Image (tube, rainbow, N blue to C red; front, side, top):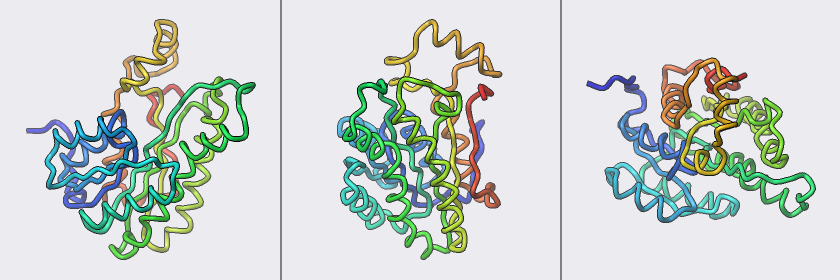
Length: 252
């Protein structure tokens, strides 16, 4: 018997996960399928997408290779998922990249590219699914934020700018889409130990700081975020919209 919660309201729901082939997105993809949902995930990493598809039940999961910076490609990919799996019920706006960069190195072109990578696609993905959700009588959009700007982290000003704007986007979408019975919330992960984070940023010094700052004295893993996203996507969170929920082990 599973030790984890089962949400009957997620069974047979059509879920779109951006950046769904690795890291937190992969955990969300896997968790949704375990709940009986049908999942279409978007990712630019063809190899990771192929690997994940081969592991999962191909009757309930499809992938789209997509550069989310290309809005036409993004919206066409979402339409392809809807055509294959049915009208979309849940959107998880997960995709992002926290590449480090100095203030001195930022150009206008780089700023625009970082905003396209970390913010712009969330709005246009929401735009692409809203008609399906309205047709279904409602839906759920979950935008993934970051605690990086909340703790005043430096070394990536374009990323923290984009991630801070997601809370404003969430509140605006929640107000506009609420009359259509579409709930919109923001989930804000703390420092989650994905393979990327551990290989690129985790050091003995940063791990020591992590353990000092978090109330919970363990490393957080992608499944910690996926479990919370399941709840927020389910009918158990049916009264929750226009809010930001921090999942960071008590750092903030």
